[in-house]
Image (cartoon, rainbow, N blue to C red; front, side, top):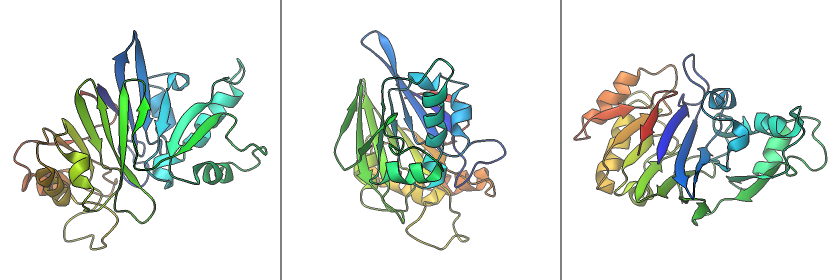
Length: 254
């Protein structure tokens, strides 16, 4: 299983990265399977540096804030109006309830079918989603809206993505024994006092340690106004190994 960071800027696209989007690929039954976790501001453009978006097998959306889902509107345009004609297969989009209506509203003047003629919206719940070689296990996390973290399993390996969350009990089963944890680190200790929104680097590391068995910890969703090294230092005070930072366009073996 491979993870490509399409975008990792927190809350909005930054000068060096789109907002949240992560491409996960694996070989299975003679071909490459491709899923994307989140598709935030600017991510569709960057995704084209890595794959043809027409080759996606599914999109999985953690929550309906624009920095995690808004480029689905562009994906709809790409699949509908390309010069060769619309793609005939509906792309599965696993997302929180109301995603189809929310995104159709963001695309003014769309026809009566909304986007559902092109994108096959499937509401998420805390139940496994099977896509080719992948088993994606959603976990409800601690954010002001319905939001999920995802545990992705394939070929005996485990990749865990927190989505946007503050500390919560579900992070332990989400992270436990993961080969790689990709954790929200949007807040800074001593500066961002609001709770129930995002992790800090320290709280991300505490959650990974408490879960047990985590092999690699990588911080992501760091807004452009943060110093990533400050977030890393907060986590390093707790995490016993190297604290990694997500790098846009980088690919990692899981």
